[in-house]
Amino acid sequence: MKAIEAFEKLLQESIDDGAFPGANYCIVTKKRSYFGSLGNRALFPEIEKNDIDTVYDMASLSKVVSTTSLILKLVEAGRLRLHTAVQTFIPEFRHQEVTVWDLLTHSSGLPADVSRAKEIASKEELMEKIFAMDLVYPRNSQIVYSDIGYILLGKIIEKITGVPLDRYAKEILFTPLEMFDTTYNPGDKKRCAPTEERKDRIVQGILRGEVHDEKSYILGGVAGHAGLFSTVTDVAHFIDMILNKGVYKGRRIFSEAVIDLLFAPKVEISHPLIKNYDRRGIGWIIQSCYSSAGDLVSEETILHTGFTGTNIWIDRRNEIGFCLLTNRVHPTRENLKIITVRPKLANFIMAHLDEFKKEDL
Image (tube, rainbow, N blue to C red; front, side, top):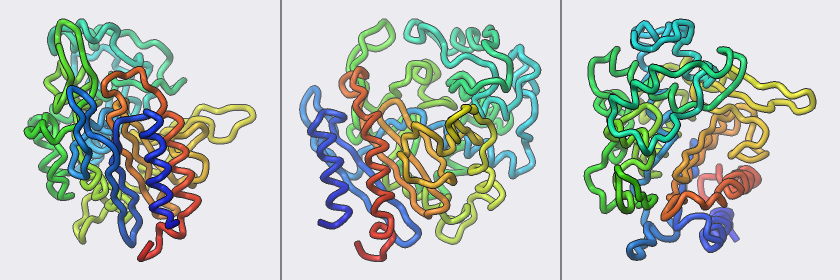
């Protein structure tokens, strides 16, 4: 059995086990890319077959594919320094010691989330809650993954550029990368994989083509932490650009210096017995223990996951990248089987690295 056939068999077993309704994937090397679409796009209100053009809610992959990338484009343009205080751009933010760098590395002291997000009625109320927040740990003393920090990063991008986040992302990033199906608030909702059924005072019914994250929903579907929708074919363009040191189809999207920065660990939680216990770079997780990228990728691997059932990893040393898009929250978020699936898929890919890197598989 060819490696790609065995990989799809492994992925189909996860679908059959109920980890997610369906899945689209890409495996990207410098020589070629592999794509696949398995299972169903929707289970409710009726079953719909999946296809490679299905648009998925990227959830927190928005943080790295879009927001982090846009921040670094501003750094390249000389419009932003990473160690600038957040208060410089958002005067309402009370903590003058917190910097853009702190937000990117999830070491700012801000809490992970807003309590009772489903009960917040307006974007004004949400931002008031964020501006009123106290720091819950000393800055740079811990890594606490925070949606709040990335909401603020989205606002900083808009303050500097003077244009909405979604418009700037399309102009600066998605159009040059030919990611034409990547957007916030997608227009063709029929192509979108549905996510969760919500029953609260804000939303009633199954979400489809509307962002799953409650805070992003309140913010109109455009936010620094969540809101992006995309396809695996589009994400493959992004991975290809990273593997080629910032160049896509001969066009330089990022400088080599920025690509190097992505792979450099910036904050780390140490453990007396375990090497690389928890490491973060600029926006991205750097390969460490208990990783969604498994056990076999190199230490020069950046990765991230998304709550809706998405994940991405890019191994620079081995020149390979992977993205899995699913709607594991359809019809409910209670299904957590994907947590064990992600590293198994990564381990399989890396165990068959030589085969995937051949011109013909």
